[in-house]
Amino acid sequence: MKLEKQIKFICEIDKLKSVFRQTYLMDKSRKENDAEHSWHLSVMVFLLKEYANEDFDLQKVIQMVLIHDLVEIIVGDVLIYDTEARKEQAEKEQKAAVEIFSQLPDEQGNEFLSIWREFEEGETIESRFAKSLDRLQPILHNFYTEGKAWKEHQIKVSQVIESNQHIKNGSKELWEFTMNLINTAVERNYLINDLEKV
Image (cartoon, rainbow, N blue to C red):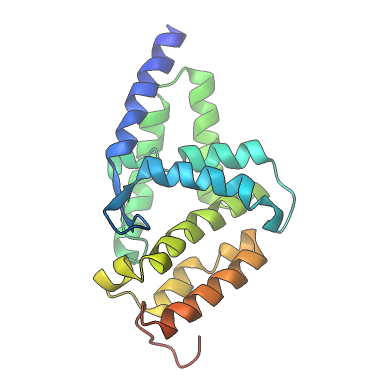
């Protein structure tokens, strides 16, 4: 029974490969899916761990980035800069988390739900670093695709800074790097500049 539930869950999360995000692959050929995003973040965790503000539990952060978007199997992805849609999305994701993780055996389901909630709340060292990378990754994609998605949605510099500034909560160095990217993006007209000074 336990193994059957675990295998069923494994089959269920295969659907993450079909949930597409607003972010383009760096070769601009198509938008990435959630599974690709989660894999990319997992590599970033151990590649960039030296830049975290504080030491952290590596396994916990990798768990967070691997499962944080599983709820999107049910509710889909929403553009980070669509503030109204994101308010509604948060409530939907809470319900989806309970629904999807309840498919696991009780102990594992509770553990996954706890890890997912910890990520969402962003109050622990691990969740702050995980959330930093979750925000940095699409900025990298936008920068290296010459602002493709930013331009499509007419995103402004102020929106990028406001929505992503908590990167510094997990890594001040990565936030400094991000601000340099944003400044360069402005210089190259990848972003609409609505600020006097960036």
